[in-house]
Image (cartoon, rainbow, N blue to C red; front, side, top):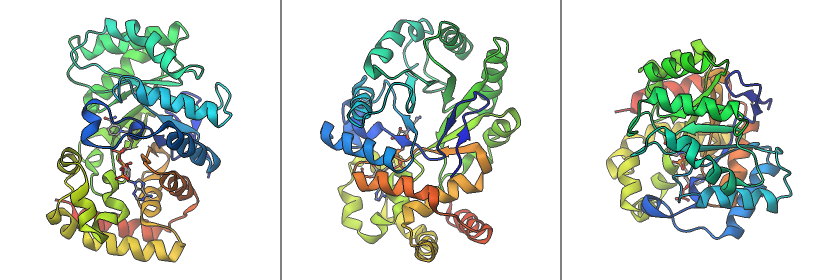
Length: 322
Ligand SMILES: NC(=O)c1ccc[n+]([C@@H]2O[C@H](COP(=O)([O-])OP(=O)(O)OC[C@H]3O[C@@H](n4cnc5c(N)ncnc54)[C@H](OP(=O)(O)O)[C@@H]3O)[C@@H](O)[C@H]2O)c1
């Protein structure tokens, strides 16, 4: 599958990237994942690369650099040279002023060493002690200083997206992307102006939780005990409940049929829908806690859904949404 440009940055990436939040179980992430040995992260990164994935997403928040360091080690282990993969990370605004963007960039560079930061994102559009405007200005200064290649945001509203785009534009810098949750069970970007704004301004949407934390793989539908074994915080955040599993069964059943027709898995159908339904605007970043997850994610780039299949999934998704 051909690559997609990150906004209008000139940076081209695979339509499916790898989310690296799973590489840390520190702090709040203990409520989501189990600790992962570096050897496992190495295999996951290598598997993703071998399957054609070129974008890797991490964040300072994922274990205060633990995920960033694991990603860098994985890329080194796979023999990737600096610049040989696209690396995205994020600055945590919560409880900080905009001056921390510049103050912490050295830590991000050190954690990802020797890989340059191709995309640096403001993790949330809320929670900072300075206005978002100042945070965006601080990011522009990092580009001008040659410390990062491009600027993205995450969890921004349509209004914040337009404002950030305009502000960066004053410096001649394109806003690359807004990282936001999009999946067959959460299509709010279609109704809150984010999709329309992104398409109008040429900004990519990087879809996080594209498998709804595993719900769209069908594994929790198949095995309710597996769902109950998921840490409580993750179950709550993603609504992994008996009620929601019952409600979404018609969608999962249709995904099974479509997957069968393509000799694909449900996770691949969920990802193929995401990178097909929204044209080139969306890039999906599934997380992997096992190597076969990364292999399936990469393989989804070869699953060509027909227009009828895409439409059927969209309609069923609308029918089962709350
Ligand atoms: N910007 C933000 O605010 C934000 C928020 C959330 C996530 N993210 C980013 O988005 C990435 C992905 O999001 P996510 O981890 O929340 O959700 P996700 O990609 O929807 O789900 C990942 C989980 O699904 C399961 N899974 C993946 N592939 C599978 C397969 N083929 N078969 C069976 N199970 C499979 C694994 O669960 P198990 O662990 O149970 O095996 C894995 O941990 C993260 O890594 C992170 O980089 C960003």
